[in-house]
Amino acid sequence: MNHSEILSHVDHTLLAQTATWEEIRALCDDALRFGTASVCIPPCRVKQAKEYLGERMAVCTVIGFPNGYSTAAAKLAETKEALADGADEIDMVINIGTLKEGNEQLVKDEIACLKEACKEKILKVIIETCLLTEEEKITMCRLVAEAGADYIKTSTGFSTAGATFQDVALFARHIGPHVKIKAAGGISSFEDAEEFLKLGADRLGTSRLVKIEKAAQKA
Image (cartoon, rainbow, N blue to C red):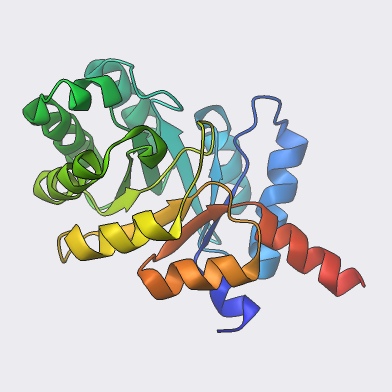
């Protein structure tokens, strides 16, 4: 698998609290240059980015980010505003405490509510694997599928750890046939990226691969 093929699976990401429009615009330019799957940016930048990019590149944003404990109503409002601003893809964070209480129905209902708002637009569900047991990860594979979401995503990149090969392999064994996998957090080499794709990931959330490719082309 060559670098261009790998980059076509990348959600080129900038979610730093300090991100300026100048930095977001540069991210968009790099995404176009290297043919990534999308740019993943803060909700407050979606409208500007969509006006800048038009239909040249998918715009992805995050909801309930990074902790997931906003109310379902707040997440829905965030989602509707992002979609109105032009977002093509939504990456939502589940309420992890609700999952750990064993209230599966509430977790599933929240996902389903956001998917209904998204309609044909892509919904990815961030479950923050580093905070979950293996049993909870398997439960989330089922709930994401039952709720009708399009992707299960490993991590925000803002917690104690990011994607692991073991978690992506676990997802691949347990996820429903219509649900794809996004690995995110800590992906720092093309070798690791390729391994995640071989294990079953369809998307990769990272900013480092484009930086590596830019540096290599300057060398």
